[in-house]
Length: 367
Ligand SMILES: Cc1cc2nc3c(=O)[nH]c(=O)nc-3n(C[C@H](O)[C@H](O)[C@H](O)COP(=O)(O)OP(=O)(O)OC[C@H]3O[C@@H](n4cnc5c(N)ncnc54)[C@H](O)[C@@H]3O)c2cc1C
Ligand code: FES
Image 1 (cartoon, helix red, strand yellow):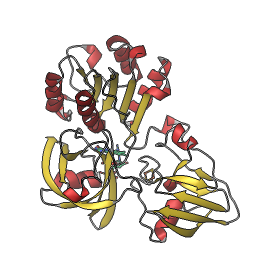
Image 2 (tube, protein in one colour):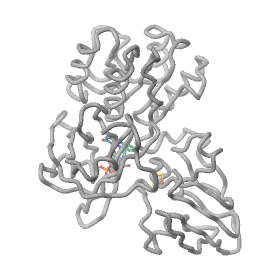
Image 3 (cartoon, protein in one colour):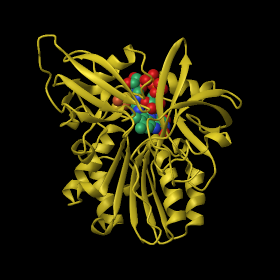
Image 4 (tube, helix red, strand yellow):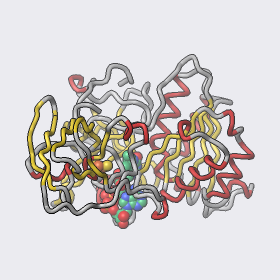
């Protein structure tokens, strides 16, 4: 599985057999999928991308996105899932899934990466919290293997030593890439020897780490993935330190902190119960549906018509429902996932989109 020549078009599910299940910590499990030769092309991934898994759990069909933790050169497709208290899908993966089981897995998606440049000697910085480490495993393994001059510095926050996912794998990678990979664990509950590495990855801590351990101005790309408050703190610090947004990549796993701001892209409008004629383009087919200006978003209206459209969170986070708005205008309730250049290019989150014009053309094949 490599980054070259990936198929285009809407992502789709295939039933994949679980080849291996591994306990990563007391509260996290990784599962590796067997990819048949005829599907190998469909499951080529880019470092940092995710897979959406679908399963019937207690009679309910659930879909959840999970980041690939394998590097491009490992020849496996693996995700790691951290058990959340009361979490339905994470509980199923951590408690029930066994080798030989079959799970519906969507083809890879996501933009949490920068294009590889083997001749560049770039310095990357990752700021990760908890299960937010998973895409970093894929990114670190890939860039250090494929870009021989690259360096990676990782700040990784956890509660305690025993809850650190991929602790040994990271230590092994440090040995393989001596002097090119630096990993700084920050623990909130266990007390480390140096106060710099104790506490939460909050604004003060991230500022301390960034000013003492890296030369912010010389870093080519920052990657941030973890709990909402940690992500907001990291964004604020990097902005304060003069880092341009173009150098910062974000991957949101859950709903960010309530104070995140600037998420609602427009206010609801009341437009007399009217509907818009919406053309959905999917796998080269065009289907016309009617979508009310208010209430039901484009995605749900199309799912009601039994169109097999891609989606996962339905919360404006994962971007699985992303499509290109070829004609017309929409307003989105919230947007945690699309970047400004994607919005500029006409992409929308269909789970959050409501028509503003009499006709829309929404293309799921152009992603
Ligand atoms: C692009 C993307 C990639 C992801 N990659 C990974 C990954 O590699 N590993 C991983 O473990 N998770 C990952 N997630 C999160 C994952 O998709 C699920 O949200 C998570 O496993 C919880 O699902 P659940 O069904 O167990 O919880 P639910 O039954 O849906 O919720 C249970 C409780 O947990 C809360 N909750 C739900 N999601 C989160 C969250 N992310 N953080 C904190 N609280 C939450 C809910 O509010 C609720 O109280 C990713 C999410 C996205 C959008
Ligand atoms: S389904 Fe996740 S953003 Fe729409």
